[in-house]
Amino acid sequence: MIDIKLIEECRGGNLNNFRKLVELTTPLAFSVAFRMLGDEEQAKDVVQETLITIWQKLNKIKSPEVYKTWIYRITVNKCYDQLRKRKRNPEIIADDSVWALISNKVYEAPSSELENSETSRIIGLLTNRLSPKQKAVFVLSELEEMSSDEISEITGMSKSGIKSNLHYARKSISEMVEKYL
Amino acid sequence: MIMVTEDNKYKSVINILKKSTPVPDSAEEVEREVIKRVSKIPHQGMNISDVTDFLFGWVYIGWVRRSLIAASIILVLVFIYQQGIILKQINYLSRQTVVVDGAASFNPESAIEKRLMMYKMNGRRFASKKITISEKQMEEIIDSVNALQIKYKDLINLINEDPELKNYIEKKLIENDHKKIKL
Image (cartoon, rainbow over all chains, first blue to last red; front, side, top):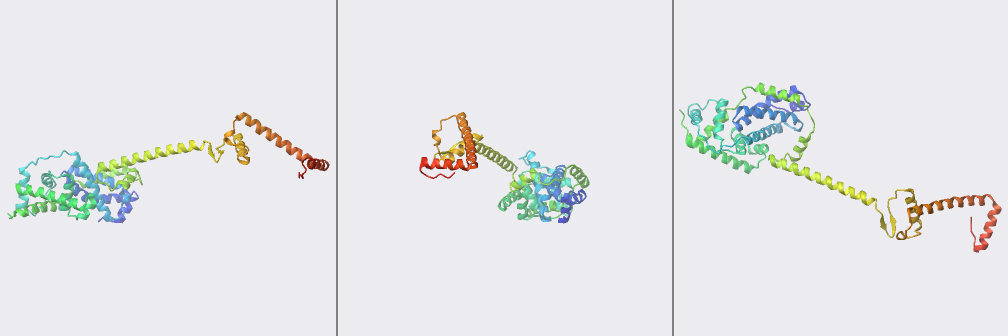
């Protein structure tokens, strides 16, 4: 749990306290970055950049609730930058092995958890057609289970924008799932 | 094998992804790298990026934010340039002679100009438009007036020191002008 006391201590430039903050923040930032990018190495880079930005701008934080929204916002913005660098591939490559993996998990072992590499392949396939904004809304809403208010705080999008982006993302993924699964 | 309906396929896939929270395989390595990089950065208070974030933090689209920052910088530079020109004009105008109600008022630079100005403003002996003498001539006039004033003071002192002379001069003045003059 990230509390205001820890943040206050980090503001003074105490690296030992910041180490604790890094430990608590890394899983949150990594989860969002990995799910948005579908690439572990890039997600790690984003997490590093996010934590460095946090260290540099820690004076702005006033409460733990704001801190959580803030780290998600920084992470999402850094992911946007990474996604913009990539070339978007409009063609959907129906990778049979990935669909076989999804099929196996859905029908055979729904209780088992995915490895990072498996998550990466599945997310990469399902969100291939989505724009960075749609990816962000999909990950935050569907996978991180955040409310539209929280997503609005993080992404700066209006509620109607979130709704339409989420609708498109759901529709796109549903169509693929219906078609190939 | 589990039976999954068409409608639930999407939910099933999402549930599997939701359940599998990704964890970095080497979280310690990430943390170590962050601490290493952070320890090289001096912990600062307010910097330029803080100011831009404070002013333009509400803009989430990168290129819009950069455009706004650029536009604001241009506006500030134009404002500074404009203020510079205005200041220059004010300084230029403050050095010019301004004619108010027929009397010239200006910023005198030399002692002569100051004295001339006082002379004009006090007595209005001549209109500003009729001044045709040179600066040298004016200097001579002022010098002679000053010399005359000194001589006049000396004369008054001499008269005051000698009561007989004072009475005599008073009598003569009364006689000449038919009126009393008190020295």
